[in-house]
Length: 336
Image (cartoon, rainbow, N blue to C red; front, side, top):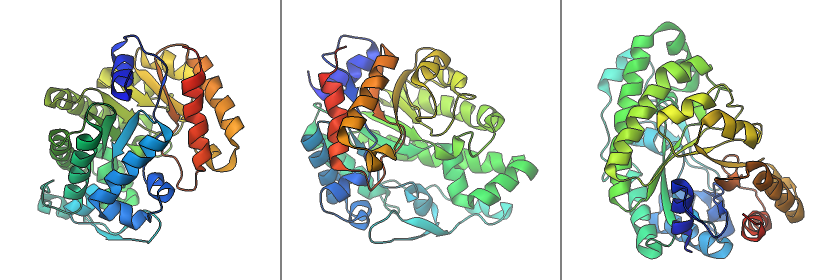
């Protein structure tokens, strides 16, 4: 059974030969393959090569068309700083006051910023792996992009004082994301992950997620499915128990849960959404391979059903390669 068949069968509730393994390996794939993070996030072929090689070495069931969380904001107009061996970060936000919102322009995914780079990398991954391995393209949720465009502090003040402006920013962010996601799907992505760190209850109150983010995510998943995404994946870290009951109504098929959320709770609260997780990401830096394998086996035993083994969020750039192998080995060797 190919990785693609294994993952899709898991999503569809069909027979599988073993549990799928899909840790969120992004920039870590560059370090594993001898490239700097700056090379990874600024060159399409480097990004594609690192993802493909990592998949071939470790046997992960999913590769990721994703550079960094600041990419979309940069394409809109934010200014970034690029360290050599860490992710770029925003040094100048494009929204400083509510008056700036109406000046925003939706970027062209085939021309603006580094969006074309990831679109090209996505196409290269699909051409190489075809339908043997799932290519998942990652885009932010509206609330995460909105916070990038304005800066988190400014965005939180707007939530408290100016909901009309918040709605405008979120609507604009949704349009940016959907145009970019459509380009990624047309370029070979099998599925879309909504990577939405700011939506975590650790950052914004659950009521903000319920009232402002969930309706948009539902609208987006409906549209993305119509565009051809084989499944929809939502990744939000932190203690998400208060928002997990909303996940089934959003229309996602797969949800990453962090280590602070027991898998049994996630399964109970999400009503049929497949769970991915949920090893503590720092463990991939500090633990030994035998420890990682045992933790992974414990996750599999707790899940007792449709489940995709992985990390609770992005794997740290300092993770030990042998710990990735230990996680995959747990999936390969454990009985269904």
